[in-house]
Image (cartoon, rainbow, N blue to C red; front, side, top):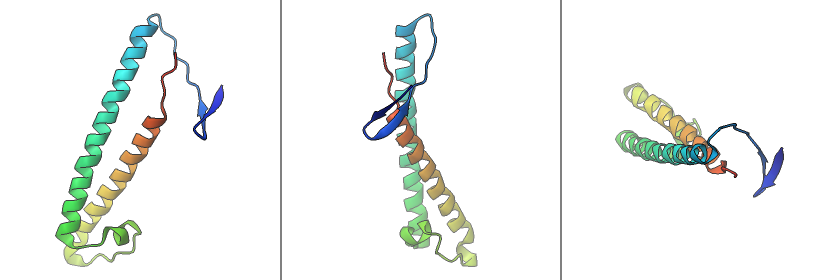
Length: 105
């Protein structure tokens, strides 16, 4: 079944278990742990982005739009910066997805 919550269309996923209380607690702990790991990964990635941006002197807004040229002397640093920006986008997307999960009784 699907419902609407906060403007989002939500689908229900069913799990079968012989120990629902334990399973519910384990799932909640796993979600909480994953959220902490993703938040930490996002912080480390942002720190690396800031370090690379400072080292190259580039405008992150321009790099995010893909409009920054790659001079030969900065090519590898800029490629790494672009990779870190993509990684951060993916981590943030996973966090947004995680935030929509709700364990129902």
